[in-house]
Length: 275
Image (cartoon, rainbow, N blue to C red; front, side, top):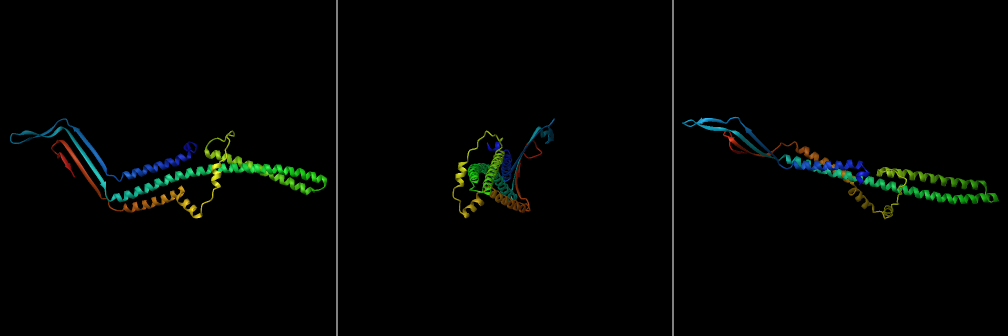
């Protein structure tokens, strides 16, 4: 899995999940809040008082009492601020997802780039080796003609310099290929095992040979399809929503509240009360 090969991309996926959770949390604040409390008490004795002409006891409170309270609260003016906070958190979540895709695209681009650099260096090495073979033959011919008196020593020296340049180009191409291979395995996150044979990326090469799009089409693709552009766009929206939320925070709080209280076992409170 890519998260195993590239551990650092897990960080950006975790940030994306955290932003998504924050979005859901803010969305939940748009709903009304409910509170339920139940208070059950046991007394060592009941409370009574004489009542009437004959003084019959009237139980004012039993040994067991229970109070159940249910309350609901719904913000009204605060919904303006909370809705903007929700839009801001949603935009930040989209930006986090785009950032995660940006990191994935960067890793993919790095792998493809180092692949191409490796095979480019190998091709340059093959070309330099072929040139070296040809120049060796030319040098041998030049030395033969020098012995025959047809060429001068300067001609032989020029052939030797060309051969030395070809050998230098081969060494340079070989070193470039070694560096590109090491960078490729470093990006992938696996050891650079010499026994691993890299296969030429034919699909990438064929795609590179396809016709380039028109400039206007390329610009539209770069603006709308590139994840880093989408990330910046969503961050701009999040900042704008946050600004509006701060403006709505200056308004007074107006809420709708309702509650119901059920009391059993005492005469000091109504059995049913609501407001």
